[in-house]
Length: 163
Image 1 (cartoon, rainbow, N blue to C red):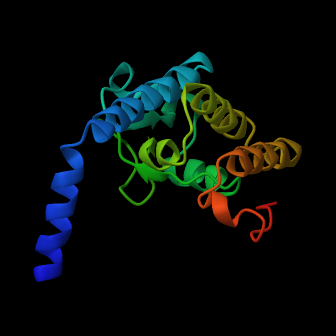
Image 2: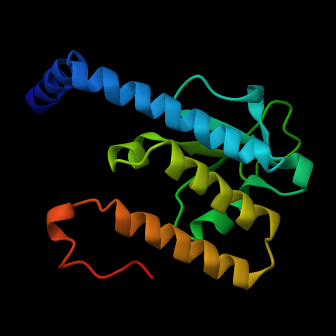
């Protein structure tokens, strides 16, 4: 249990720093940019937007389940997960929503412009579920973003591209 206490102490200490406050503001700003990008493509966001690090896309308006949407975005290397929406007619194993978050990509250094692009990639894939050419283009766009914002910049010469 000491390791849990130590971990919490480090996290609380980090949360007190000005850098964490700046990071948190960027996480929220980026989530809002992602929500706007999806809304601009006629995808509905539950509650009309977000005030925190996550957003929930209501897929009923495009006739898609959360399970299918999760498979589609996972296929282009975007991590999301199916999630129920208010008054969801689908079971919790299928759902009508897709949950997206901004912390991981913000940690990589992505900003509003990149989150707008990510929103467009997601919309392109969801609105063209049977088009493999669109899927390939989406995968390439994701790979380009990941190449620009590597997880470990000092290892980029050792790590092959995602595509």
